[in-house]
Length: 260
Image: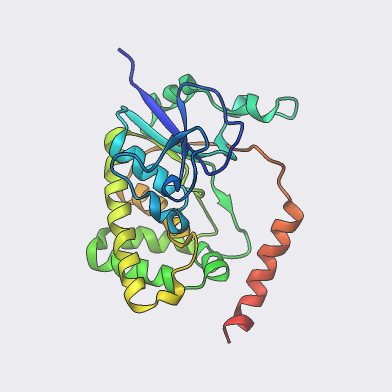
């Protein structure tokens, strides 16, 4: 009997999601909104009410606690992992997305699939985070890692000093690895949240812990020495690159003046 793979697709509004039995659309933050016809992340064991701070991670938490599958993953309604062989101009975005069967074949080679690294070029991952979100959250994360799981700190520091990394909280893992990652990640995030609520509540801003979690995946994979397959990210909507690049540069060079 083959292994079962489930990839939840985080959705927060009605959307024409990919039709594939491997992909399961899940309404994230369902506890705070009316239903939109998809599986909800507020059933069973959940943290659905935390969605404004944790973004797609409330869907991941629900899947971790409630889904039975040998392999588990997370993607977004606007971002999927693609088959490199079909990522060519004459294929539609949907045609480029990796099927469930293809993903399982990749998992036979490595126990983890990640999106191709995102490159920032002109700054490190830590600098990019600080320019976009301030430094409070990352400093608390660093302190929590040092206090609770110091073995992860060296890889965390290496990751944050680089100018590239795996982003978007997108991954697919063998179930035992997914369980281990989620246990470590959520335990750490909940402690970061607790400390920030007690000491700097003004810094607890929308989507904060989703952004922090993006900086945790690489250090977990690297510390544990797991082999990974990287696949291209398929954006289902047209990217406004000029605006993205302008905001990126603006944050970088305005940040010091804003914080003075």
